[in-house]
Length: 321
Image 1 (cartoon, one colour):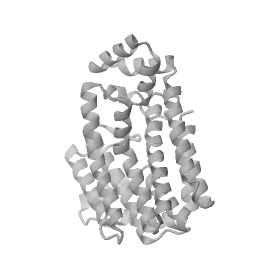
Image 2: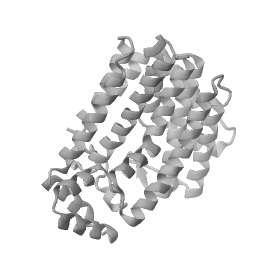
Image 3: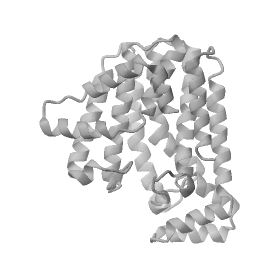
Image 4: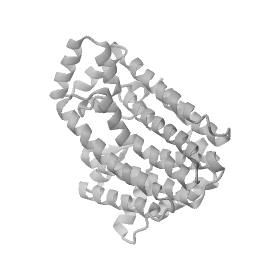
């Protein structure tokens, strides 16, 4: 689906790629070498895809400011992944060695900082200061979300309300910045901004919920490691489903095991989630977010771009079925 959308975006996608890669030229051989490595092993570039689709759904074109917002979104997202790999001691990502393991944690942090600086360079002169504000807010949200998650993981007392706040900060905030940046760049009116803000919010929440469900779904993981969240003491949507459906003694026993994790914890948690139908609970909440995202687009005129925005929302739920 992502490649199909990017093919539909055509020249706008090529222009985004050019600005994205071009923003990373540094004149420092080692840094340029590392940047080339990251570019060669990049992900789906989902956030800039949304940025460009939103612009086309609004006005049918992507202007220079939209292209810069798209590049800034991917730079910011990739920078946070580099920092996450250091925080998580991750040896690989998407089956490829991380910068932390190939070079050093220091290198990963510094390169991540460089990408963050390039992201802000792209939008700092945007004529609509709301763009700088939403990206700046996103950076703060990312840090707040990580710290809040660490705090809750230490005590293992995360509530579902806490969980929604955490995933908003860590995931949804950047989806909002990516799409609001496009809306402001295309001079969207207040009604258009409101509907796209709602769409971005529910897309971001559903994207992280989908990821959290897949962490408890080895049969759907497509090679991605599963069971990592519980090992990191993260209480996510599938566990809330378990706590809602299992006897309290079962929930207490699992939480006790999470305080002193071992190699059997992940399989135990996945087994309990499956035994008590906890993924059904999680999928119901994911489906509601997808429904709300699609409904938010109703005020926009029909177009191929809007259709793709709807399809991308539906894809969130399909991947977890």
